[in-house]
Image (cartoon, rainbow, N blue to C red; front, side, top):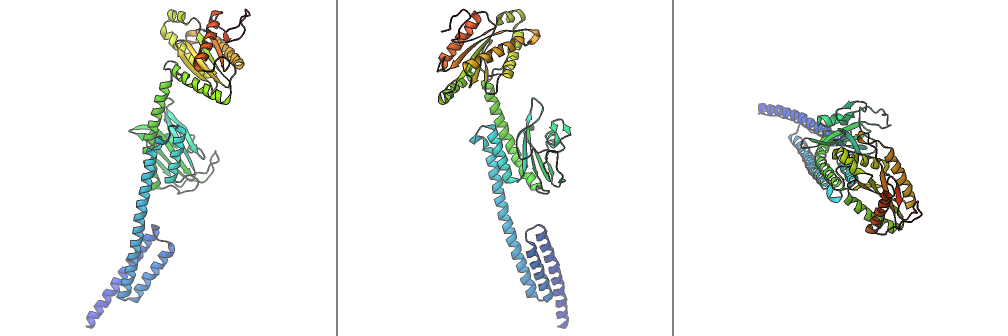
Amino acid sequence: MRRRNGAGSRQLVDITDSFRKSQLRLVKILAEERLITGREATMLRNQVERAASQKRSSDVLDAGVTMNNKLARVLRKESCGEVARQDSELEILLEVSRLMQATLEKEKVFERLLDLVQQAVPYESATLFLWDAGAERLQPATQRGHHVDLIGGVRFDHGTGFSGWVAKQRKPILLSELGRGRRHDDAVVGSFLSVPLVVQGDLVGVLNLSHPEARRFDADHLRILSLIASQAAATIQRLLLYEEMRRLAITDDLTNICNRRHFLERLQHEIDRARRYETPFSVLFLDIDNFKELNDSFGHHVGDRILAELGSVLKYWARRSDLVARYGGEEFAILLPMTDKTRARCAAERLRQKIEQHTFYRRKKLTVSIGIAGFPEDGESVDPLLGRVDEALYLAKQTGRNRSCAFGEPLASGLVMS
């Protein structure tokens, strides 16, 4: 009997010691993973040590039940938190895919995208770069806070800085413990995150995030940002494709300026605006002098090159608010908002002289005739206004070419257009 009791006692001691070690190891793991607080960890360790010191099976069992209940609550809490987190991430991804449904304005889409990224990965500064295929490099599209990039002096095939490397390698970068020294732009970067925006192997852009504190970004942030970037890349690609299709629909393919249809739409819009605010505007019609002879003498390929070059000259000359269009053949139309006919007359004369002094393809020299009409004095709707400016252009050609004429102005002979 004593032997049995001794053996049982030793067995209880061994079991108790094993229990104490395993439970303390579990407490340590829970604390390291931050599933329990430091105070809770201390209380559980004391409870385990107290139960083990009693060497009574009931105390050991009570401590085990307490630990298991605590663990069950932690796991249940983590499970619910994981479900909530997954739901939140899914909602963000769905919202990214729905960005174009609310607006087709590029700037608003980009701003909303940065808002959604903020919900998933809290940042201080963000920069979205888009790939410019024509220039073959990344171009900043929008930013929040400081412009975000690192190693700015280092250039890669796709651009400078880490964004250029990320674009070339198509791989994300996570730097969570950077030095806290200030950069040349006075920004402090402790954590940096950069992900490529790629659709079926095609580069769309790069998204960079930063935070002044170290260890603010982790592998989980990198995972969700990569998911968002994948969804955003498809959305941005569709947006840019839509924008390009719209640009082509309103652009003359030879001169790369607006076409006649878009000019007429903008003219009607400008008439409506000028009526509402009682402001003037003017219209210019410009025609190349003797263009048929140039085509006949040197061929249409030379004529086309000169038309394209003239389109560039007009775009460079125009203000940002002006609209330049190829109206048809060698005739161009220019809309000058907030410009009365007197000021338009001066602008037309400067433009005529600029074209006369310009040397075109194959060292060709051109002159142009320009007609001018103003709203509202020369017409309060599209057709009368275009009729008047066309008459002014016709008079400029009939009276010697290489000149500008405004509808209704006195002519050199003392006559007045009417």
